[in-house]
Image (tube, rainbow, N blue to C red; front, side, top):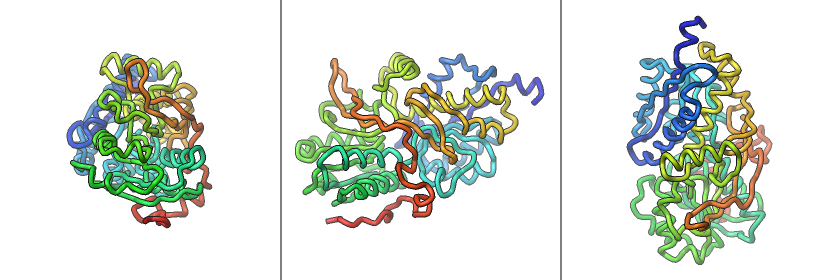
Length: 390
């Protein structure tokens, strides 16, 4: 790389759903990376950084158009995002051909499993990674044996429930009812009404989660059937918009504002100061992406022209202090790190997710042998098959 290129800004292209049904979460991506870049004075590895933000519109077609513009027109060095599994799946083949590093929060399992994208880094978790842990916790730490599960009716929902159901039943539990609701569901009451004759329920609902939890409590279900959730169920970023209906709900996540570390304290304080609420897993994922980019640029002496060397440097990043705890990556580029079991409580007039238990160095394969795991189908509506439905 010549001196003029070396002195030019590193161009980061962010794919963020700023409009459409995923906008609330998509905006967090931009907030997370901006918080990190401001903290670093928009300078990483000795080079200035320029952030170019593209709105995906929360749909696959929009995502594909925007990533092409970022790479072909804007000449970005690195792609950040997108948010949703279906957005990442829409651009996966293009990224493979373009050979541009992408640091994504999208959870689509097979992009880091059976069909790994060598240009992908995931700083959050695969779809099933956190539900694996939640299921194990319920099966081994409680007396719950019979459960109902519900998630959004698309890839992320299928993979969440697939991972949850597999681990829960492998550890002696039974899934009695399995429900899927459209991503734009206006009323969850018909689904909630079907949750009966079980010890507890698990929700993997994303965009409509506040509405679901509120209706679950309003119908009196929470007192009879305890509610558990995955990463999107009660994200810390939602706590300002929800009330007593969430108290006692137990969830699992790869990030929580309650985790105590120097970097997370700074991240939480800066986010609360600027946005008036706790950061959530999506904002944290983008903050982490910034940390990974910085570490990689330090290793490459600021060079971005050799994309093979750049993605290799990213995959070799091993951080001891991040907002989510220690972070490294497996050979497929997926995050290995802490997963927290959290209970919603009221403290000092605020709703907070308190850490009940921390599972360390959690892999996307959980405790399963990776070769055997990959030899089986990706989690779906049909896999693993349900043995105990009533």
